[in-house]
Length: 452
Image 1 (cartoon, one colour):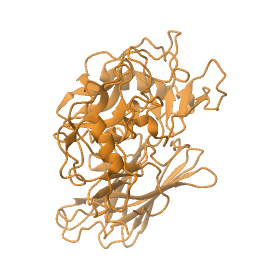
Image 2 (cartoon, one colour):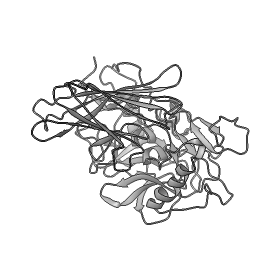
Image 3 (cartoon, helix red, strand yellow):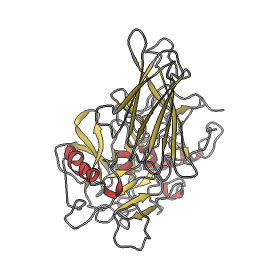
Image 4 (tube, helix red, strand yellow):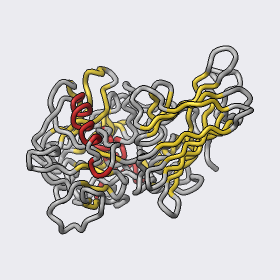
C-alpha cells in the first residue's frame, strides 16, 4: 500500500510568477476565476512517458490550495492537463476544464517573464489548446535516475562503501553537431549525451571559438551572452540550452579521479579545465552569490556572481516527481525511485555509518545502505536553508553534515559529506568524525504505482 503524496510541490517543479516549469522549456500557469479574489492554482504531475515512436507525454492537473480556497484540495482538481511533445518538436498543451468556475490558463515556450499564449477554460469552453514548435523532449531516460559517482575502487574493509554498489553506472555517448550518435573511437565531437539521465552536454574545444575551454563569464553573462549565443546559433539544432542546476552539474564529477583534476571523465568531456564551473542555482541566503562545482577538487560551493568562471551548457527535459510519505518511517522520491529513511539516525563515524545502514531493518526492508554523494545531494532543496531540505517530508532534518558512502580518493581517510544547512558538498572530513546518517534503498524508478 502506498502512502498519500504530500500536499506540496517538489523542488523539481520550479515555480515562477505563480506558474511552473514543467519541462526544460515549457511553463504553464492556471488561475481560478472565483468571484472574490482569483486563486493561483498548484500544479501536480501524474506521470511522464514516451510513446513507442519516441514522443513524450506529460500528464497532470491543477488544484486550489486549501489555504487559498474553501473547496481547494489536491484531490479536487480544477483543471486536467495533457502535454504532448513530438520528436519533431511540435507540442500541444491541452487544458481540460473540470470545475464550475472559469479558469484562466497561460503557457510559454522559453519563458522570459511573459505568457505567450492564454485562454479561459469554462463550462461553455471545456478545452483550451496551446501549441508550439521547436520544443525539446528528453529522448533518453525519463526516469530521473541518478548516475553513480564512478567510484569503483575499494577504500575500506567494511561493506557498504560506494564501490560495493553498481546501480546506475555512468555511461556517455558522443554526438556530432547535428545530434547524431558517434562511436567512442572518434576524436572530434560536439556534444555528449548522458545515457543515465538523458541530458545532453556541450563539449568544449581548444580553437578560440564559441566553445573554447579558456572562456570565463560572470554568472549573468554566462546566460545573457554565452547561453544566448548558443540558442541564437541553434547549436546542435536546438535553442533550449541553459546553465545546469548545481545537482545536475555535480553528477559529472568522477569520484575516482584525483584532486588537481579535472575530476570528470575526460574520454568524453575533453578540454575540461580543472577549475570551477557556474550552475544556474543561486544562493537563497544571498542571491548575489551562485553555486559552482569545482572540477579540481570535486566540491560544491558558492561565490559572488560578478566573478568570472567557466561554463558548460546543457539541454534536455528535467524529470519531475514528489516525495511520498509512506507512513512507515520511509519517504519515496518518485523522481529518482529512491526510498529514504525518514528519521535521523544520529551522528556516528563513517565506518559505523556503513555498518548501521547495512544492518538497518525498516518498513519490512533489509536492503538499506549509505547513499553515495550524488544520491545524498539529490535530497538538497537549494530554495531552502537551515535546513536545505523539504522539512514536510523530513521533519527531523538537521542543518548539519551527513555522511555519503563515497571516499575522497586523494585522502582515503576522508569521505565526502553533504551539508544540509545550505548545500555544500565537502571532502574535508576524517572518517573517524561523527556525522549524521540517513539510509537509502533502491535506485530504479518503478513503472506504475510505487510499492514498499
